[in-house]
Amino acid sequence: MRDETGSRTSTLFDKTARWFDRAHAALLNDLPCHQGCSHCCLGLFPITLLDQEELRRGLRSLPEEQRRTIEETAALQARMIEESAPQLAHNQFIDHWSDADIDSVVECYQALPCPVLTSEGSCSLYAFRPLTCRSMGIPSEIAGTVQGACAVQTSVPLIRLSQSVRQEEDRLAADEASQLIQLRRQSGAAGEELFMPYAFLLTTVAETAETTT
Image (cartoon, rainbow, N blue to C red; front, side, top):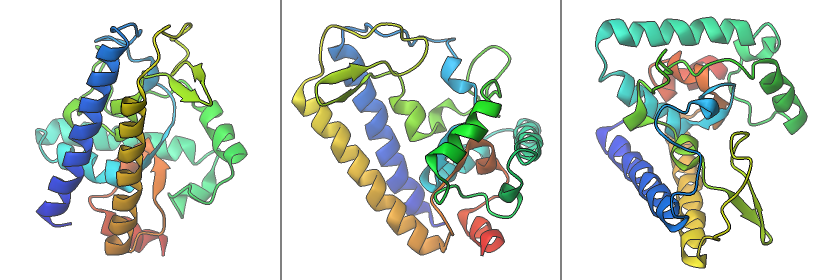
């Protein structure tokens, strides 16, 4: 991918982080999220091609030994996951999976730490973390009903986010969808979503496309 793609996606990632900060402040910081909490860093979760590009960009910024350790950890986890889902050895994308199939694999590995989670509970690639990580912690709201963002969040703030903040959330989601379409078209990738460990197995999206077509 060209450098301008990285710049474009980084803008989306930065906007999402700033949205979280504004939402967090609007909720008067009444969230369980704090430095050192890594509950949402355990278990499998899907990320997108955009996230993969950003993570790989961050990975290239690390010292070689640290980068190799993360890649080896991710490869080991992928082999472990494929014991329950052998089809992932041939096609790492899960777009076509049913929700039930995804939930089944996720349940099997709910204690699996993210490949970039350190023993101290911090993220080795925090500045390059996926979009879902940047927005995690803000309670979701559907038809006026607010739900906690994670198991640690046993109660939700009494304050509700303003319509403008929720509208910005929707705009960011639309921007992500648009960029995903463009990136998939450029790369020829066979899908858009994959489990976190697979983001570190290949250097570029183009290589991912070659192995799944």
